[in-house]
Amino acid sequence: MTIEEEIKQTKFKSAHHKAVLNLLFTASWIQNKQKEYFEPFGVTCQQYNILRILRGKHPEPISAVEIKSRMLDKHSDVSRLLDRLIGKKLVVKNKCPNDKRASNISIALSGMALLEKLDQAINNIDNQMLKLSKEESKQLSDLLDKGRG
Amino acid sequence: MTIEEEIKQTKFKSAHHKAVLNLLFTASWIQNKQKEYFEPFGVTCQQYNILRILRGKHPEPISAVEIKSRMLDKHSDVSRLLDRLIGKKLVVKNKCPNDKRASNISIALSGMALLEKLDQAINNIDNQMLKLSKEESKQLSDLLDKGRG
DNA sequence: AATAAATAGATGTTTAAACATCTTTTTACA
DNA sequence: TGTAAAAAGATGTTTAAACATCTATTTATT
Image (cartoon, rainbow over all chains, first blue to last red; front, top):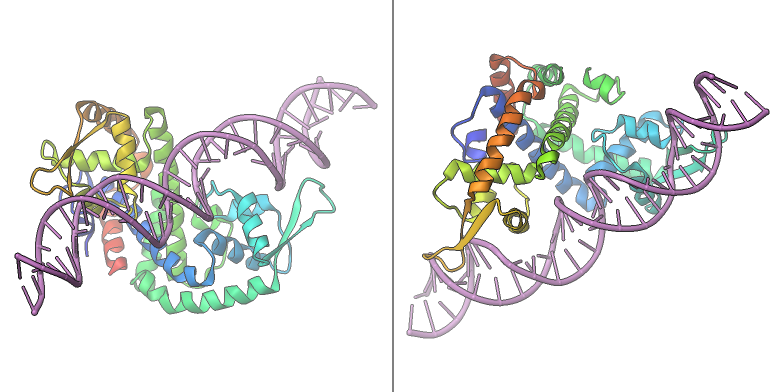
């Protein structure tokens, strides 16, 4: 289904504009798919994002600021997102000894276990998520990098 | 700035996965830019999206369901989005004479005027939004269409 | 025609996003 | 050293998103 069909629009002001609309539509489309997959596991996309970031550094703990700098959505409310993950015992927060303002955040064992289950699911759907060849995926990623210029 | 730099991640599970992350990041990046531009005009991205849809059909009125089918985010709460636009006098809602369930929604003159101002702004930033050539924009859009396959 | 199913949209409720502001601690620098 | 500026997070508040449910009307079925 082309973007024209998806949003029932045949004319676009420019190729630029069409690409922007398509990009926003596709991102929303992917997020809705991801949400469906994550829902049975009780986590949101943003929470998954944070867990992945923490695992990437595991077993080293990182600060909330560091997490924020690595997130896809740069305007995330990391403080309360972490509260929820801590409430679910997926993440552990400690005081940072060197800097009394900062916190040392790390992923809990249960968080690691959950991520493994999620990865399994994600791997299964990865090709559904974006049905592109390796080469096309690279091309897409490069165009996006270039587009943000 | 590459996606690697943007989210401080050097390794990706696959080209697919990197493309998905880049897509979600870039969409969030664009939406934040748009939000900044719209903010002084007192409308959100979703509200702008609805106004554009209504103008595309103007002077013919359309139903809320029709609007929803054309929106970028297919899970929008159109009913209350319209309430807000009506509250701002940008949109007019009437009963549909043929179908007592449905409504006839159209853009108000003040809505048209606002859109023109917004378009001005958008046109000015369009190239900032995605710094791609016409050909690259088309290529990007095609890849996205194919990716949703 | 009678009844079930589907459609259009409104509304209630819970949760999270958005945005600013505030506190504490650290850093900079005069 | 003392004071201002910056940084890390927490928190308060308003607004909107998410999700389900509900009502009214229309369409389909038999």
